Length: 237
Image 1: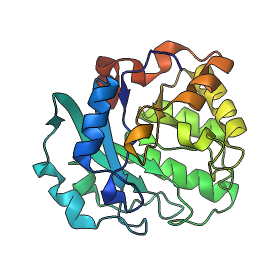
Image 2: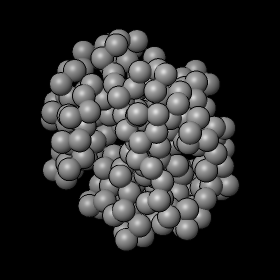
Image 3: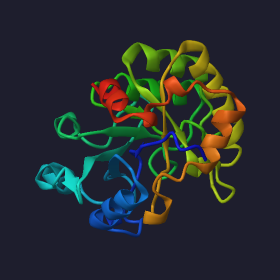
């Protein structure tokens, strides 16, 4: 893996219900790994086992710096219908530092290509969403070109999820889907963000498989948001 990466925004703590470290443990591990910024984006309430609305309402009391490491605290919110409805209200999402919107089979059944595309577009058009998470699950067939064009129009980042590409991933054949999306992002000059999707402290900024794919498709470094905190903050505005 190249040493061009300085941040990771897609990580989970105990609060997600199926992750295995505390916020403090994740922050300390990120600091020790040399990150310049860590995002913690726990699953929103529709995911079984995660926290309820009150957890996210009260996230404002948590410190945005630990061990000298800046933190962005937010959520991986679930798209729950084919119009792109999300499982946290806008008034809560507006208080988050970062919002990733994803489709998960435990929260929405895969629909037709048209329905899945509409679900993604609804999330993209929500002003509080910053990142479209792992749009590489082939169970959700959708129009990739429309997604990339709309992401550019609305200023959203598209995630390249390292966990999707791991040999142990339950998102089968994600690699080919990611290859096509990266080609479209390159064509339309749409920035991406690499996410570890870490559910343990050891996986923070583990971009091994994602970085290999970026090299394979000769993806421009200038379109990768993880290479600079300043670049990321400008893209999140």
